[in-house]
Image (cartoon, rainbow, N blue to C red; front, side, top):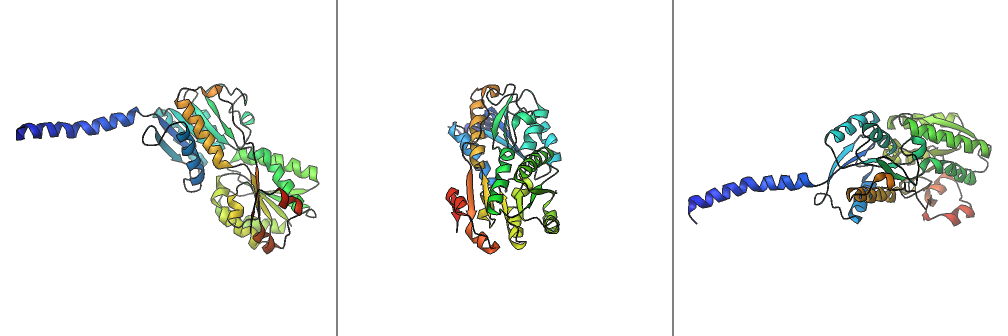
Length: 327
């Protein structure tokens, strides 16, 4: 081949390959993944979602592209994020966390939505039925709100003489905060307990919230759900020990970080299920025909070292029911 012909052919290839690569990339389905929290705080859950996608044959960067949108606790940013994804005409929106799910539902009635929420999706207005969601929305619920009263019951079992309890919620996450307060207040009345609902909107307010609870003579604390408290797990664990305030949270990360106990579903597996639903929709399934999935198991974790630091002994009944005991 003559030198001039080689240069001409090489030059045309150099132009062609980037175009081919871009064409292949644009041919991939695009998932819009939106979360009210941050990538760091949701790293385990994100891996669960990616794993679920993989179970349906989709590998990020090879057979599917993902556009990530993290609100970093700024729920007010979610509508603009959703509008951007709608403009980009993504194939599916994975709206993880309750605020993201509600923002997605408001943004589009045509793009399929897979939600992950801790609340009752019927009460939120996301679906009309768990078995037949209808419309463009389906997903998974970890039943955080429904299980919140059980956390208070477990705390009462541990502290049977304590009559004043606290519930920590984030009023900025209005739907979740109101639902939790309603359920836990009802459970407190049934148990004959006084419950103080304490509002905190940022990690800077944690210290002051504990000060208020000490003044109110709160003897046990249920930590509410939401991205704010996930970000602050280590700080909350340390504060409960420093102020000698026994507390229970939904995530196993809490006792692992030095908190006393946790009770809840495996949220990473909930994200995995959301990933499998996203993959199934990419393969052609209709979201309205996919039943909303719910957890089938709840885990109880206890931290013996923290209990000793607080001067608490777990009853044999609690120890016998624990799925894991951290020593």
